[in-house]
Amino acid sequence: MFSAANSLENQLQRWNDIIRNQPQNPNAYIRRGMVNFQLAKIDESIQDFDTAEKIDPRLKPYLWQRGLSYYYAEKFAEGAEQFEIDLTVNAQDVEETVWRYLCIARIDGVEKARNSLLTVRNDPRQIMRSVYDLYAGNCTTDDVLDVGQSEGVKGNFYSHLYLGLYYEAENNLELAQEYIVKAANNYKIDDYMWYLAQVHKTLRQWS
Image (cartoon, rainbow, N blue to C red; front, side, top):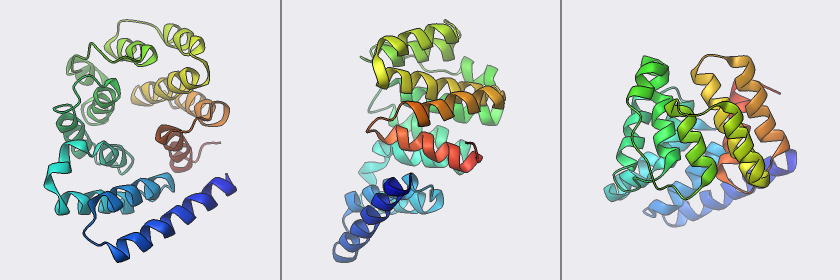
């Protein structure tokens, strides 16, 4: 992880330099916010996403990254609102819907989160359709793992990540840790969500 962290620090410096020269470039703040998040600098990431929105308010429904940061800042109401707004422009994304569920579960409990789960029918990713069915109460954890297994490393990563998050919402921290640590350690993919799994481990002090 040292080399990855070192690379992220280099990226952070690059975006600092770009922002110094282009202080009104909203994309630069989004990109720096993403790097800050990957470095587990959650508050700094939110500040960057907020700045991007101030520069260009039209970005608000596209700031899904801020919703993730809100979750880890334990700003669950703000997170749920962000994901709900995101779904107005990306209605077929299971991940947006599931993260809204996770935020609501932390505020009002799993039953209310499940009852308020928004309908998503056409996400093209089989593993995410299976994850949705789990959160909706329509399949088992083994079903999700089977689909993940059939889709290789990426499928395994997503099945383990979202099972871990599912168990965390259920307050089963032992299984949450088991699955998220496996996602982070055993199924590395070149994806923002893999870094999220690392951030989750760091903030929960799991190994």
